[in-house]
Image 1 (cartoon, rainbow, N blue to C red):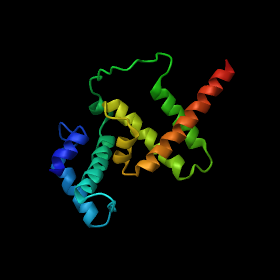
Image 2: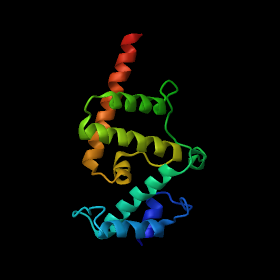
Image 3: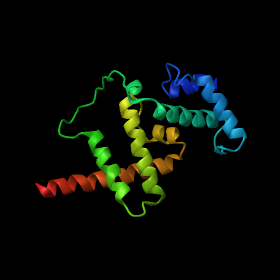
Image 4: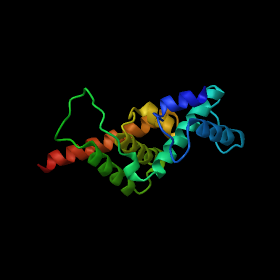
Length: 165
């Protein structure tokens, strides 16, 4: 059951580096049992296994060669804004956050969040903060705090660009 949920939630249609959903579930259970990963006491064991498994899948996908991650673009019924390139804006935001002298936990979370967002954009996965939180194995509150930090950096960047014109 956990393997099916993990495969569905991680969009795992084919093995990643030779590992399928059941391999990730077994590794998640091992890490939870040997203390490498701490379970969230507020959720069930199954949900903890899936949460850790999602993080493992994401980590393996990060290690794959870039050409293996490219997929066909997914049709989205959302209007596109030609003047706004999300990928380059995320790179700029990450660079600004890296330049921060001591970014603190929320700054480090924001940098990790950006890396995950870029990965998800490239693979056609979900970019919702709640889903990114599961992939990063952080709380939703931390994910939303990171997202707010990213938005404020992007907002400052856009306002700075407008002032320069």
